[in-house]
Length: 413
Image (cartoon, helix red, strand yellow):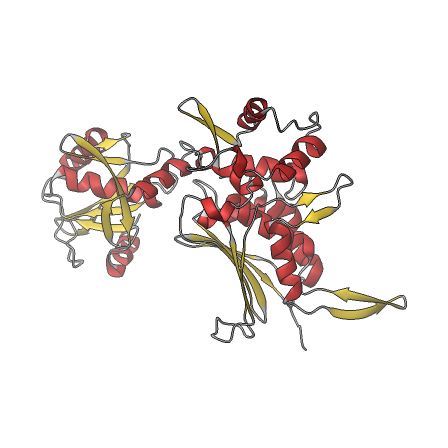
């Protein structure tokens, strides 16, 4: 970092990635801020800068300050970290210490020492506070330490599954022997081996992923499992909504033995909503009328399936949203991208999975790309071919959005 970059950080003030601190605060205060920034996406702690942005400088020598910071990060953080440290002379005799924290910290959640306890800290805007139980779970999930989809769903038994869908998957897709519904123990063992049930105190209970995929009524047990589908007449949300539906049910459809769809799952419901609320254009091709839909099905299917597979189901009280505007379609998934995943990486074909069981089973059905590169190999090429537009992939603080444009360059000219 150079002095110009430092000046810009100070001028912009504290935010979710920048914290100002004097270097005479207690070590616990520094550790708390370090843990919170690492648990978000890294950032900077500027030592020798007051809360109002005034630069007072380090109260100790640069070497002593560095040793002090490194000891805090070793003894007051769990797991210990080794941050990048540098100093910049702000003006003659006034030095600012810069503690740079990586955006790709792999061992979340980071905990700060508070007395005899270790406490997970999170950053919310310019504020650092103790993490809630749900926030801590999400941090474990981001680092791969917790698979939320394997959690047992309270209040459920094997009866919460739709046996018809299980039969279709086990027999038609996996080629298992005919399903014997009377052999409950054998069926539970098989479902546990497929990570669709979890072991709890010596008994087997349906797991989150199992209910999402094959549950009779997923919304009953997992209120965050649906899709809110909306259609507006213009380019912005409006009270004059044209359609507002809550789509619910298991993710996968029910198919006949010949592979034909018998009953829609969430993916088919979402596709049908788009078809009902968009109008195709028609043209003649070799004397035949050919309808051209606003959005290609391969792109829609990929975007919808990705949202269902990769959303953060540990975030309660909010569904995926599918919104149709006059000029675009947006699909928003609750939760940020998993740890180390970037939009650039997704476009390049990076394989990742927040919910591996969902990915595996939707891949078995052919809902998602078997190579795990659907964004690169399906979504983007389909939109290029359809209307020469590039899908927008937008990561925000608590959600991820895929935006598809209705018209390409020069439309309407």
